[in-house]
Amino acid sequence: MTIQNETTVGQIASEHPLATRVFHRHGIDFCCGGGKPLKDVCAARGIDTDVVLAEIQKELDASAKPEERWDQASLEELIDHILVTYHEPLYEELPRLETMAGKVLDVHRDKDPDTLSELQTICVDLHAELKNHMAKEEQVLFPMIRGGQGAMAGGPITVMLHEHDSAATALRRLRELTKDYEVPAEACNTWRALWHGLAALEASLHQHIHLENNILFPRALKS
Image 1 (tube, rainbow, N blue to C red):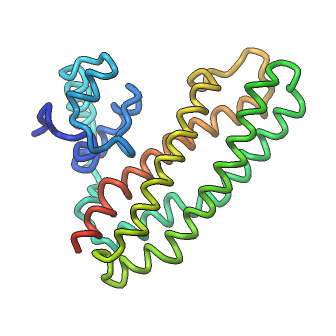
Image 2: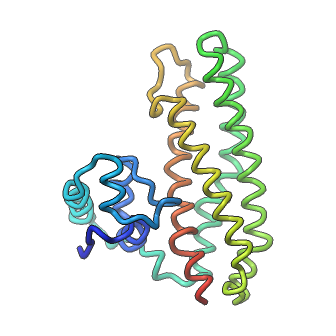
């Protein structure tokens, strides 16, 4: 493994996808914050860089099969992967989470009205924003890249990056509101399912945004 302290977390995640497990455990932003060197990110979070590197090496050593390197795939293959693995499931998952957030608010409003109300609002807004965001990618940006016009897509890509930052902000707030997705003792089954679903959404969106911010968009602009 050839990772230096100055290597950006986005590059590490691109070249060693299993490293994202370690980043997730330590709350390291490798998607929207992917341009920062590992040493700076670790310093900001009070984490020993050597510990993180050792954990990454452990993940790599424990893997029974080669890592899937999307930075080595064609742009067309990467876009297809993003559509199938991330876009399609989101069209089903986002309405489900929004519905559950509404039910939890209706039934348990008296337990924590401020938190549950804000959480429900974020779920509604995130659903609307990501639905619109994915439509723009599918109808404008991705066809441009497929058509060999990636170098001319600076404007649309700038918009997508801004919207990724907005989604990342919403995810951070959801984690704060849920106290790192620790399920309350009084939670019903729907409440538990909502917390687990939001945690899974966070992990998926981090991977999704990473593939676009750190691999697809830079390569498209150079194509």
